[in-house]
Length: 273
Image 1 (spheres, rainbow, N blue to C red):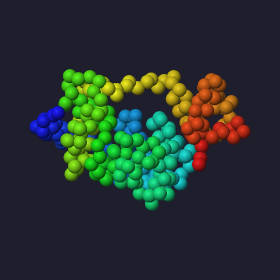
Image 2: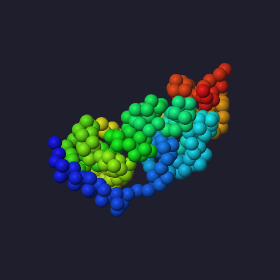
Image 3: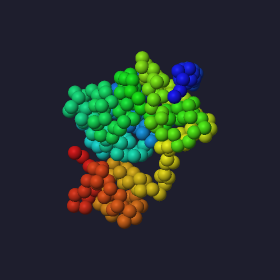
Image 4: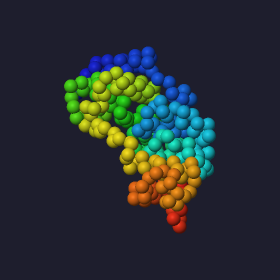
């Protein structure tokens, strides 16, 4: 579909950009499998610059899976406050436990094994395998999508990811996939900041819903209150958070279903296995 010359030009442009404007992040400067896994969980739906201070604190406190596996979930959630999507924290802690009990404390090195961990989908499995072990996996996220759409599909809309995968396979640097994906992501991120986001022409593009006033915000307030201020009954949680009783119970029910919150005799706390 696309000539080898065009693919070579794409690789040349992306690599040249990276040499001049590649970004530096702590999880790139000191690459460890656990650090990569932590960063990938934190980066899900969270801006990169916001993640940096959280990542540094987290790695100082829990520098290996065993350290997190042995920590109370309540402690982990306190460190997570401000990142949002608190289930990611629970999944990461549960993943640390599985890594210690089933993999001898070492993060799995294949995307197949990584996909068995909670909260790890196709993208995250491929990204961890690539960035942690330099494994030549093929995966797509928003910046990668922007880069490929910009270069190969300039005038097309509603482009499905299945049209991008062959190009990613063909352009992949199999000797150093880690650096190639760093370059691809940085190139795509720059494109999104410089003008109209090419990812909007993807068939999978969906604008993120507003956070303020959302049900997600209510859940986050409750998790934050329970993690920071400790267990409480519904009356105390209403006082702490200002959430109306009907919304409070709805959010608490959802958090209990997700194993984020436990309840005993009307008192709610952060769930522990």
